[in-house]
Image (tube, rainbow, N blue to C red):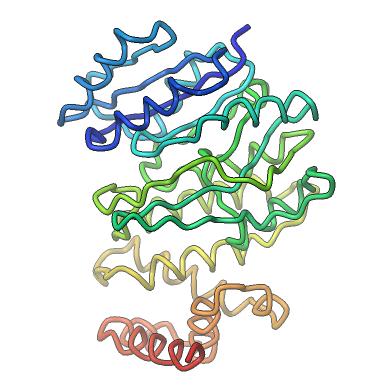
Length: 338
């Protein structure tokens, strides 16, 4: 059996793709298959892929006839995969040479279903930031409930790309990336993968370089993403509602909705927005002092405290519409920092 299936969804990442594929091909660990899904790119991404296809027999190309989105691309790769483990790498990111070897050896040594690592954020100005995953671990083993809580409290990354995942966890539990969600779909998948994993290991080292590409649709705030994030939040709420693990679902929703509602302009005539706002206000009303203390992001905490005090949806909408609330929160936040 192939040890690892590396799944690389590609959509218009021509600028970054060569570095991405070189970093995978040149790994110290060779027993891999590289499944590249071209999601009907309109740039020269397919040309780049075909060049690499002629250089390495481990590469498998899935060339889609129409653009179906990131979830569908990942699902196509998982369906095609034959490896014991699955590793997701986005087409505009890259990995360090020992990444696959180190995480695979760690997984086998510990009989782990998932291995999580720290990662780097790379910026256009060459600045690189080390991101430490705030997941408590004892002798590298992660407590499942704590890991889920940290993801729900936005203390840990909910992406699939810094995690090695046993293929059996996907298959046995019939976990798919939701194709109806075009953005932020990882949030609907990672909690399920963690929940069904028997053993999770954390490596306190970074290998994955997450490129802060300002043109990437997945890395921008936009009004459509609010709806997509909300769908992911509802999936989590429905899934964990009757599970034995008690998780702060309301805090998960408040944390994520605060970020998106705060960073985009919305149309008050849009019923979907109003429904989300109504749910958001109800959630804030339910939060206890203990819940408020659990919110780690200072800016979100300030927003929530203000909105909880207002306790009036109409006032909230009016303030937001004329940008006074945003301005006030920014000013107040700066005072806290300085």
